[in-house]
Length: 363
Image (tube, rainbow, N blue to C red; front, side, top):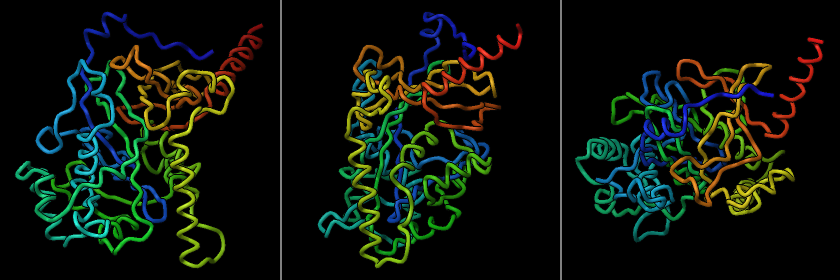
C-alpha cells in the first residue's frame, strides 16, 4: 500500500490554520472551445512559472464583501466572487466579459488605449470597476459565469485561498475583439503591474495543454490539470472534414450543451463504489475540493492526492469534492511536476499489487 504521510495532531493544525483568502478564477472558452491559460513568471507570488486560468483575489473596494471567516457561506458562489472573476480577467489579460447595458447583448468592445488605461486605473484602485463599467455603458456579464468547483488550499500552507472557479463561454461568433484574436496565437500581454505576474496568454485545446504538461513543456498545478482533464472529455476539438461555417458553429454549440449538462448532473461518478459515495450527489457546480495526501506512490514516489474532502472550513457541511479520482504529482521547490489524473480505485489497486510483489520478492 502507498506509504502513509503523517501529519501533525489536529490541535497543532488548528493552531497553525491560516484563514483562506477569497478569490475567483475563470476557465475561459474561445469561440472554438479552446481554453485560455496565462503564463506566470518564475517570481510570481502564486503558482510560479505555471500556466493558470485568469483570476485573483476578491476586493472589497471593487467587488463587495463576502461573509466572514466563521460563516460557511463565505465559501459559496456569490456576486462578489463573480465580479472578481470578471475584473481580474480584465486586469490580467484585457478580455472584457461585459455586455452593452442597453444594447443587443453583445460583449462590449472598446479601443485598446482606453482598455489599457482602465486596466491600470482599476489595478491601482483609482476607480471602482463597476463605476468604470457604468461610465462606458457596460454591465459585468455575471449571469453567464457557470460555477465549476471551489478549491480550498489545504491547511499547513503559509498562504491559503478559497477559490471559486467558473466557466465562461465566449460567443461562438465574436465581433473582432483584438485581445481575443491575439490570444489565439500566444500573445505577450501588457499587464497593469508591468509584467510582475503574467507574461503571456494563449488559447489551446484542453487536451493540448495536458499533453504539453505531460511532455514537461509547461507547468500545471493540480487544480488546473484536474479541470482541464474534466473539460477534455467534452471539448474535443474541431469537426472532421470540411464543413460550412454554420455546421462548425453547431459542432461547438453541441460540445457546450453536453458540458452544461455535465455540470448539473448527479451522480457525478461512474464507478459503482464512487457513485455510492456522498460526494457523488454534489453537482460539479457546488463541489468544494481541498486536496489531501493519501500517501506516496511506491513505484515513482509521486504524492497521491485525494480530492473528496472540502477542507476544514466546511467540515460537517454537505459539501464535498470528487472521491472517484486522485491526482498524482511530484512537488519540488514549490513547483508541481508529472501531474496526472487517475481513478482512485485503480491507483490504490496498483499500490496493493506493488506491495504484494515486493513482499513476494523478499521471501
